[in-house]
Image 1 (cartoon, rainbow, N blue to C red):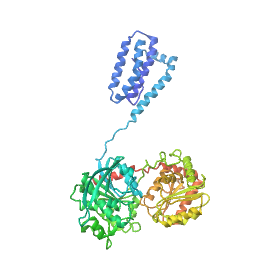
Image 2: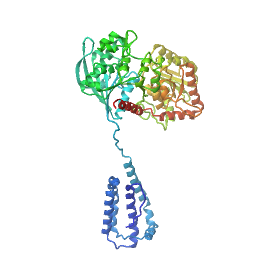
Image 3: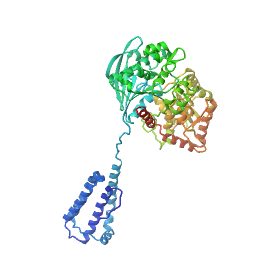
Length: 614
């Protein structure tokens, strides 16, 4: 039987075409002859079906097609006897009005068949990992949602979760603080306990291990009420030194106890600074010593410095580590972070610019020479944010959800809701500036205090959220009273209000004196709020300054730490907002489109792990 063939890319599409041609031919043949028995047709249909079923690429699709087409073939064998028509007869048959009646049906059938083919093309294909699976133990002092005081808590939560997607087996080890919400504590499972010798005089302490599994990550909490019964994770340096000497040693001892020996031990800040030191000294003849260690600096200002006798007693470390190249600092002090930098295999910090800055005297916090010496193992990898938590489309805390397609309209609604909630004048025309920060000198708040009277006019509103030094808390309360209805100072930290400010403000201030990475500017951009930042650390790495000639960039920046330059950056943002609104709106959409997730950063960490374990 002559069948019109349509040239296609797949065997599946050829199979779809043939039954249609057969159906048309059958109607044309009804006019010409009834001399061929239906049995002949059945055999031919069967042979075609078998041939198609044998084709490997269409194997799965063929079955679906036969189920749809076969009934039509069976009808044909009962109603007509088919003879091979001539080419001219087929041509005439196509001109028959009856054929046109079936066009609608054929289109519907084609659509169905195409959707089946599309469905098969979209099936996910499993890709084998290119490198062996790595096991990583994170050791740090805080982690969202259990306990969080700053950016470290966000990183300890989001990075392990992202690494699981990069084919890593991750365990996070934390202190079991009394302040951890009961909703998590009640779900912890007891994994075991033992006594551990800690102090130089042989004094021992209890170590309990409580486990909690969430989002593919295992969280092991070191339990000891003597050290972790305080309401807050950090109290004073006098109390924190013994606490984190104990924690660093107990974390390694717990890995040996559980017989879970990782490829990498990833330590964070000074609270875990002694882990690499212990690993290369007191634990050098234990199974956990096979692991490589990485120490990440989240903020170099905090180093765990105290007198040598106290740290030597509580750590039980040998005398030889208290030298000028390791823990010793100055004449009498020991520096826990400095010891970790010496003994770890790799040092990372949270942005490329900050990795360079901390090797200078201005940013180096008296460790610049030490970091220069170890610069060969120093890397900078910028942080990301958890885009599952920070998601404008699903964020339940917002007045109105939005995405890049409707941000320009929906942000206005969020702005009005924010103004109403905070008692500000409700006006879409106002340029709303947000400030979400710890109120300390590191965050550039002395610059902000100096220029608020010059920033405030009938077109501007400022919203502050945060706690910290009394001098800044009091000054922002003063400005709220001085500019009633246009300044709101929330001297507290409220996660819900932070989300609302990110969504309702037009711009966000981050004028930091120094900023290792910064997360607020990343969240602001993801929420369509334009960052106004100083070019330092991660702020410089993540915010490209706006260029009015090319109409490109994703924020407004200034370089030197100067109040006049901050004022200029704010005025440039306001000028664009009021005089070239379409350019400002384009920047809003550009910022929302920027990838600020952990995916790329996690891949860089995974590559670093592979490099260390090569």
